[in-house]
Image (cartoon, rainbow, N blue to C red; front, top):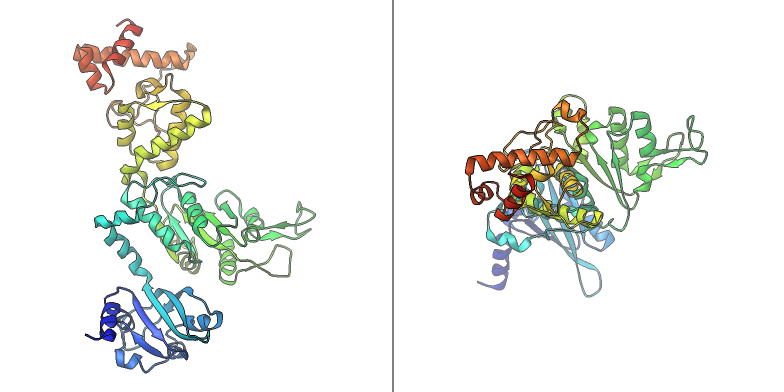
Amino acid sequence: MDDKSFYETILDNISDGIYILDACGNYIYANSHYINSLGINKSTLLTMNVHDFLDNGQISICISDIVYKQKQRVVMFQDVVMSGTVSRPPFRQLVISTPIFGEDGRIQNILAVCRPLNTLNDFIDEASTHEVALARRTPRKMSGTGAIVAESQTMRNVLWQAAEIAGIDASVLITGESGTGKEVIAQHIHSLSRSGSGEMVSLNCAALPENLLESELFGYERGAFTGALSAGKAGLFEMASGGTLFLDEINSLPLPIQGKLLRAVETKTIQRIGSVKSKKVDFRLITASNENLLEAVADKRFRADLYYRINVVPIELPPLRSRQEDIIPLTLFFLQRYNEKYGKNKRMAEHTLQAIYHYDWPGNVRELKNFVERSVIMSATDQIDILDIGLVAASHGRPRKADCAGRGLYYPPVKEDLLEQGLSLQEYMDRCERAYLAQALQKYRTTYVVAEKLQTSQSGIMRRKKKYGL
């Protein structure tokens, strides 16, 4: 096999589409994956110029022209419409187009690597099934506005995907239940992106009424309305210029504002309220929703064109109950954080960690964080014991009744007459602990068996037995 055949064989076995152009945009090489994606035979393609696809409407932008002009690598998304003879729907691909210079400093060739977006998740899934995926392991704890704990494979995949898209100025839509950490992931993407040195400006779209939302996003000129500041005010689009704009709960955005947002995203221009002039803004948009936006589109509550514009790169965050490997590491991380914050030295009892691990956490990471903070503040001793703190991870505001030493965290019921007696919290917790310990001693007889059943030490049982005179 000669050198040419050898290298062509190697390129044909790469799973991305690859092509090479000459200085005039003529195709001089294409591997099998690129040929198959276009549905054109190789001999035909090698007689074509890249502008042929632009002329017949199969592509709307010629990335190679940008490379020739800027004389540097260009990474862009490209929409491809298949020819009439190919029964395949249009698709979007990521194109990395790199110039190759000659000795005279001019571009001699362009090397392009193409990957259809619908295959990105396939690579992630394939990697997760092989042990070699550990070589791409993301650090378990990362600095920033929040903790990113990635013991589970699902969260490692999310962080890998976030890192892959951080360098591409494409709109990102993060979906997931409330409390899963969508803003933390948005901050992570921002910090890794080219706009990371700029500011990330955040807004919860559900927090403001429609009239205030418009002025917050677009700003206003002096005298635009009653109560307006005399100097006017810059909106969040302007504040995010050179950085990232993060819009949380975008599913709550009113329809009239959605149309204005679409124009701002597409044109990168905004117009303040009360102004007749447009302003250029350069920002990266990251949005988040705790609702399925396609259902909102079907219900006519969300514009379809805006949905497809913000959903260029989707990231779905899993609920905490589906990544149990992260529960204990998250607990210990928050424990360290709140020990430092409140000057404590608390630690979790083993059976407390077991109860935390088996709980469903309907409020996700936010609920777990609040529970750990509450435990650090309210536990009577340095060892955080479910039997001591008498706390519950509340499901929709209601206690979840479960075995204290088993699969949940539980409050004993409070009788009204106890509240009227003016019982202190510590006195109530002592009563609960004494009653539970007395029941265990009556059932299991020996302190060794009781300690085993309650997942604590025998010396701890003896100490409590003496304390309560049992």
